Image 1: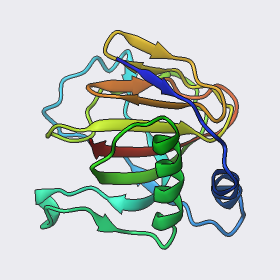
Image 2: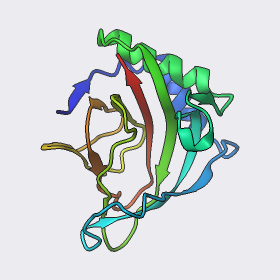
Image 3: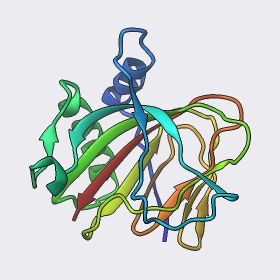
Length: 177
């Protein structure tokens, strides 16, 4: 189930949005590679490449660490920004597993990403839509057609539609309550 949170759009939130559109903000090419045994309808879904800025890298046994690792000097800004949103909505957060900014460009052809879960252990997801580019998010039987500054939380398998004309920038975080 997708739950929409109110966004207080604080001064810190405004600053964080300005930071990501600065020409000096570092974005990194990411080729999404999924397990070769993952079965999905290749005529309907698409494995995508995108730009990302990892703030907090997820724990993963294949990399040799079982705990999140700070990847960016900007982590504290975005963590505080998220906590302003969670506190405003009286949502509890125990621990963040991952924080990442994703930038996806419009694409021709197949317009849906592959359904997936961010981790193989219990967690919740939060998405903060930082641009107004569309890109419907699907989670189980729920659908969210985003607008700039929307914030949603959900659990479970999810995927999204690629934007039609402008870059889609979202803050993605996973956490436990």
